[in-house]
Structures are given as C-alpha cells and as structure tokens.
Image 1 (cartoon, rainbow, N blue to C red):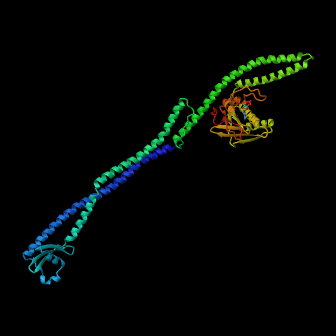
Image 2 (image 1 turned 180 degrees about the vertical axis):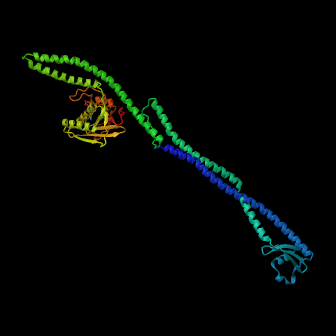
Image 3 (image 1 turned 60 degrees about the vertical axis):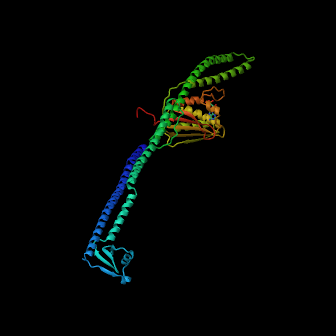
Length: 468
Ligand code: ADP
C-alpha cells in the first residue's frame, strides 16, 4: 500500500495541471475579449471618418445644387401660395419658418437633396439625386457604430482586463498553494508526533502511544511505532521480572541448602529415637515422633519446591503440538477434579509452537490446577488457543471467584505458603518457564467470570532455523 506516494503524485499533478489548464482557459477567454475590444476601437475610428466624409459630401452637394439653381442650370418646382392646400408638409413648414432658404434630404432614405427658396407668393424647390449615397441611412449606421464603440469603451475594458487577469492569476496560484499547505500539514503533523514520541521513548517514557489513525505509509509507521513501544514495555517488564527472579532464586537456593542441612540430622535422629524407644511411655514418644516426621516431610517437600524454583534447567525447545499437550493435561486434570467440567476451544489451524515440552507441561499443569481448584465442584474451566502475530496464544479461564486486586499485584511474585496443597511458587515458576521459552504469562479478563491467564509462546514457523 503506497497511499502517501499516490496522494503526493495526485497532488503534484493537480498542483501543476490545474493552474496550467486554468491559465490556458483564462488566457484564451481574455484574448477573445481583447480582440473584441480592439474591433470596437477600430469601429469607433471608422465611424468618425465616415461621419467626416459624409458631412463633406453633403456640404459639397449643397453648394453644387445652389450654384446650379442660381445659374438657372436646373428648373425648380414651383409651389404657389394660392395652391397652399396641396403643399407637402416640408414646404409648408419652410413657409411658416420665415427663413429665406433651406436645404433638406428627402426620401427614399435621404438619397435626394432639396433646396428651397422663398419668393413673393411662392416657394421654389430644386432637387438633385445623391445616389448611390443615402444620407439618412449613413447617418443611422454611423450612430449605430458610435453607440457600439461607446458601449465598449464605457465598460472600462482595459482596466477590467488587468484587474480580472490579476485576480485570475492570484486564484490560480492561491488554490494549489492552499492545497499544498493542507497536504504538507497533513503529512508533517503525524511525523512530528512520531518524532516527539520517539524522543520520549528514547528518554525512558515507554508508556507513550500515538493515537492518530491513518491508512497510508505514515499510518503504517505509527502502527509500527505503537507496536514497538508496546513490545519494548513488555520486554522491560520481563527483564525486571527476570532480574528479581534471579535474586529470589539465590535466596531460595541458600534457604533450601540451610534447611536441608538441619532437616536431614533431625529426621535421622527421630528415626533413631523411634527405633530405640522402650515400651513404657512409648506411645507418647511414638506419636510425638510421628508428628515431627510428618512436619519434616512437609518441610522437605517445600525445600524441593525451593530447589526447583532456584534450579535453572537447560531449555530444549522443539516444535510442539499444543493441541495434543493441552488435551493430555486436561485429561490428567479431569481425573483429579472430576467434579469440574472442561471445555476446549482450539483454533483448527493451530501451528506448532517452539518451546520446551517439559516447561510447557509444567505451565499448563499449574494454570489448570489453579483454575480447577478455583472453579470448585460444578464449576467450569475453559482452554482456548489461537495463532496471533507469529505467536501462539493459549488462555485458561475458570468460573471461580477471580482474583482480588492485591492478588493481581503480587501474583507472579514468589511467596512462601504453608497451605497443605500449594507452595505459593507455582505461578512464578510457570512465568519463569514461559520466559525461558521466549514467551510470557499475563493476566487477562476472565471469560467465565473468574480468573483468566494468557500464555504466549513463540510459533514454530516464526523461528529462524539453520537447516531451513
Ligand atoms: P500455589 O502453588 O500456592 O497454587 P500459585 O503461584 O500457583 O501457588 O498461586 C498463587 C495464588 O494465586 C493461589 O494460592 C491462589 O490464591 C491464587 N490463584 C492462582 N490461580 C487462581 C485462580 N485461577 N483463581 C483464583 N485464585 C487463583
């Protein structure tokens, strides 16, 4: 899974292609607009020239018509005052205006020029054709062109273009920048947390974990870190336990030795005493001697337990079929505690463990014995087994009363118990055995309401072997 790499590639593509595409698009649109703008400017200039030419042409046509009229080269149309009722509108208006003369363009579309003169009792009108020029049509076209050009320049296009261009460039640049800043923060924040946590672990704070959930490479690194910190913490507690165990063992060895030194002569003397006793008053001596012999035997059992605890047997790991060992231990136990019901829940695919068979048997015997005793008549004991993370996890649960807080704290510490049955060393020997095999024993939440113990053992497949 290379999510971060893919994200970075997509980000880089987005950060380069998006602005490129946007710039091309905007540049094309602006070009189009500016072309339109320059056409409007041309139109403005052309319309002004045309207006000047039109005005000049009209002026000359007027002069030429007037000189033709005055020289008598053209015959006028006469409108007599006596026939006023039949006059056209333009003539009537001229008559009423009291002006001496007037020029005007006439239809169609202003392609004729008329020259009107006032005389006593009549109006003379000369006319000439302006064809193919139609003055009114030209004036209308010029007005239209001017309107278009004015509308274009009124928009302040040049300033608008500049502003728009700046704005577009800014947004084109700012959007990918914001995207980059967002991703940079997203990537750097967990790396920062990781560095911080690593520094703390290096300075001895092993309880540090990172609570950021991610599915990319950074997330993988965080999970690896959390796993490593967890392992380190467990290794450290194992190391501390083994160091404590070493001093407890030295003490146990010395005590066993001293006790044995005294116990052996006591036992021998008592045996001698029993052999030599006379009959009178012998009953009391015999009973006393038996009590002492019993106590000595019990003390000797304890000494043996101490010796076992203090002993460091060679560890001979091999590939172990845990299912077979668990079934065998449960069978043996059910003979001793037939009033308890047993349930096995072992995963179908349980790979072989890599451990010393005698040590594993010892561990299971201790845990199962404790569980059966705690469960009592009618109680239940459950054994589960499954592979996990290159290890094999066995658990023993019982329906007993569970463990008090005090018992939990000191469970794996060796104690000297004077109960008939236990020595108080069983769990420390079991944990030592598990540690010697490269595993451990932990207390877990009980599934049957009572105590729950987890045994972790290395899996055979995860062991590096010289012949493989
Ligand atoms: P012992 O040899 O005396 O059984 P262990 O180290 O095996 O010594 O056990 C120590 C003590 O822990 C036991 O005496 C018992 O009080 C407690 N204990 C162990 N297992 C269980 C259990 N499954 N349920 C309740 N208490 C337990």
